[in-house]
Image 1 (tube, rainbow, N blue to C red):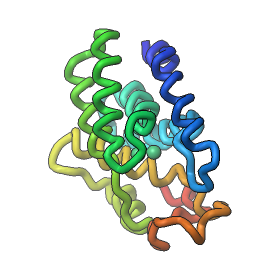
Image 2 (image 1 turned 90 degrees about the horizontal axis):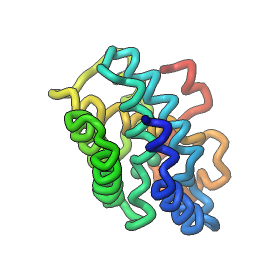
Image 3 (image 1 turned 120 degrees about the vertical axis):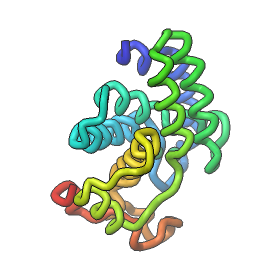
Image 4 (image 1 turned 60 degrees about the horizontal axis):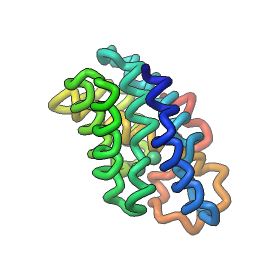
Length: 174
Ligand SMILES: [Fe+2]
Ligand SMILES: [Fe+2]
């Protein structure tokens, strides 16, 4: 069912809108490839922590986390993303409990931390007060790690703080 949801024509349509909005963007994009990369990283991180239903949840959170940028291209896109995916998942009659988890994580995915804090979180298997907050944190980390700051041509102009930019050896550090 997940494959069906992430190839739903309404989702692909909104992705096309983001592609058009970002056609001249010099910074990281929020395209299909970004979603795929976030999904791969989130799957690894959540699997290691033994989170229930990690495969499906990782895919759904990752593919939908930025879709709200089609409606609102700013830092409040997380709420729009969550509203969008909620309607779609309800239509597919996806498990209610997981819909809540997905929407919560997406709604709280914005924000970055220092690269060192990311590795500290991973190395020490840190968790939040609740499963949903742990998912939100892992989504945030996967989102940040998916960015190739080390080879980015717009690095100097990027608003990210230097300590937040991802280094070339990140894969060996997670
Ligand atoms: Fe985002
Ligand atoms: Fe993102």
